[in-house]
Length: 422
Ligand SMILES: [Fe+2]
Image 1 (spheres, helix red, strand yellow):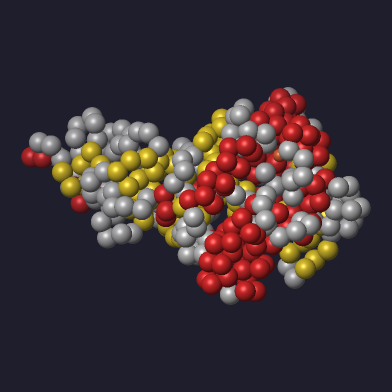
Image 2: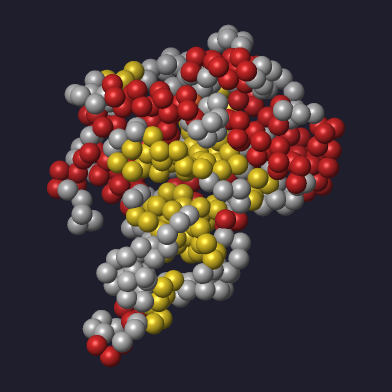
């Protein structure tokens, strides 16, 4: 138990605020709910920290948060990727500022305590008077850190069981899918992250990133400026004509299957295969014709890996909870290893147009989330999430609905309720 957790949050029961088709708005605004989430979701559970490609060289680090705890994702001298608290074990001063860098060791600005890349305390100035032995004063770290296809996750309490269990078959398939798009299986998240701070709750972003119902209305200005995108057949053509689906893969992992509604291959890249013939050839050589053709049709996944990783097609996003009413949505283009520079430039340009404060998508989503936060700020009130309840079907253990259905919201909240109920 985290001693910082309020007694109210520790004993909080949210189960009556979530029914199969309704959720109470106070779950977005109640500070005790937020504190309980930090404990039950981000401390006791697995969440995404970063990708191995972000720290390619020895001593490379990027700064992240696990829940609210500042951490460093670091490449050690042994070539391993580790996660360390970005906080001196002495008086708690932040070791690294900024978003990324390269260090031979980590040295605290206050008294000069110096740590190895693996977090062991290596040097204490004026050591004769030192009380606690250096061997007992390493940097804190999550008890469990694991990775899958280069995606690094942390579970601070160490009690969540194996990462593979949290991801499940569905989560692993989604990460395989993203990595398999690269002919070498490598992603290259080196373009930099752009963080957008929003006065709204983190769960609104998890949901709106995976809401197939709002595209025509909220993002109408995008389709007027950019007609002919793959979303016309995949989401905008009308409820009866659109054949795309959404999928609850379990464990809170949810997906929009726009690819089922595409009208040609490579629709997701906005170009024909002759323009990227070298990519098609490399992917076919690496994956075999059948898998390559599947990937060329589908493009990248559109899915949430619960709780904070959004596989946003050719972008990746981290949803960082700040408080009940504050979130930072960080995104970076999903650049691929083993492709031409021109291919990745195309991905970068697409990302700039869609994401970021000057893009077409996120400002719209941010505005809707902000207005939800304002509207729920009082006593709350209920949200209706019944859309498609009468027509969703099981495929194995997955629940599948029309792409516009709230099958995905219900899946998110079903898992949320399970992990939040003591
Ligand atoms: Fe949106």
